[in-house]
Image 1: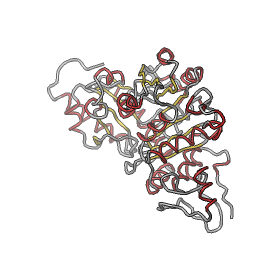
Image 2 (image 1 turned 90 degrees about the vertical axis):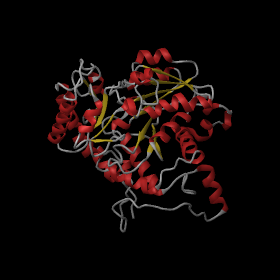
Image 3 (image 1 turned 90 degrees about the horizontal axis):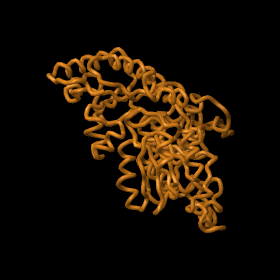
Image 4 (image 1 turned 60 degrees about the vertical axis):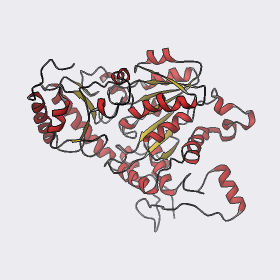
Amino acid sequence: MSAEHPSAEIFEYETQAVQVGIPRGLGDGVGIPIHQIAAFQFETLEDGASEFQHNTGYSYARLQNPTVKILEERLSALEGGAATVALSTGQAATFTAMLSVCRSGDHIVATSSLFGGTAGLLNNILPLMGITSTLVSNTPDAIRGAMQQSTRLVWAETIGNPAADIADIAACADIAHAQGALLGIDNTWGGVGYLCRPLSHGADMVTHSLTKWAGGHGSVMGGSVTVGDRHDLGRNPIYTDGGGTSILNVRGDSALSWRQRWFGAHQLGMTLSPNSAFMIAQGLETLALRLSRESATALELAGFLEGHAGVGGVAYPGLESSPHHALAVQYLTGGFGAMMTFEVESPAPFLAALKVIRMAPNLGDTRTLVVHPWTTTHSRLPETARRAAGVTPHTIRMSVGVESVEDLKRDLDQALKVALAAGQTGELVR
């Protein structure tokens, strides 16, 4: 019986998405089994001692589970990474990634166009642990200017949430590496490597909210951290303190991925359930089909909205009018993504008038969803931080699904006309 599968070879994205993790052989199932198991047996005392020391197999499901491991292998293949730890949510993944390279006294430089939950970690949670951060505009010059001696991590999003700006990943990597820091990229909007593989552009680790395009159907939560194989930990005291007993000396090339599993799963217990792992792995099998369709629809809708009298401005990197279009062409493949924001003078009547598009704070769903970030996802941030993230009181964030583009156009058009007729006056925000 052979356990060979395509993870060890060079295949295209769509092939890896459906093949990685499934063995080949007589009696093997064509699919991924759910291992709903809490603990795994040892035959000898030595087996147990070795597993708890090296964590190369299975002992307790908080650390590792066969179903979750298959998902991790698939995520690593799709992102072109060396190792992945899958966790309970995207927020858990971001927290784990940051803690894996920072401790009290350390500093993070992050771009300001961030998911509200990430900004919350940087502003509210990490300071409790003595970790400080500086949020700057999404440009290499701003990032370079904010670097400190204690900076251990530069953090950005492939496509900013919700500003739809594009990180210059290679430039950010050069800035971070020059000081011995690492570059972390939240690649959630990059669709698990389908639109962008940040590791191939110099990033050291990528995170995902697997709740979004990986799961794809709004039915499961999860997150992941994937690391590459070129990161340099030699100037980070977390990994070098202790000389011969340092993490870097003991764990070698797997030091970063080991610490992330130890932190996120072993110590903090932010474990992904096997049933959720199964559903996410299933979602990955159609991600390319969905995101390709959604990106094409989004580009058409962005052009439609850009020319609509009821819209004050559209932020979508696929538009040639976007100031981020050149970077989008440089870093994105297979489309420009399924996300955009646009400005509506009267958000309340517009949102209430929608008949096909639904108002919900998720994205990456098969259904098209909108939300008003000013009062929801970014509402807990100070006003200056909200505006720095690309959010105004008139901003609508839209995640495009797989519906008919004509039906979506009709729905947007009629809702915008309702908003215009609601008696609002004044020039549209631009």
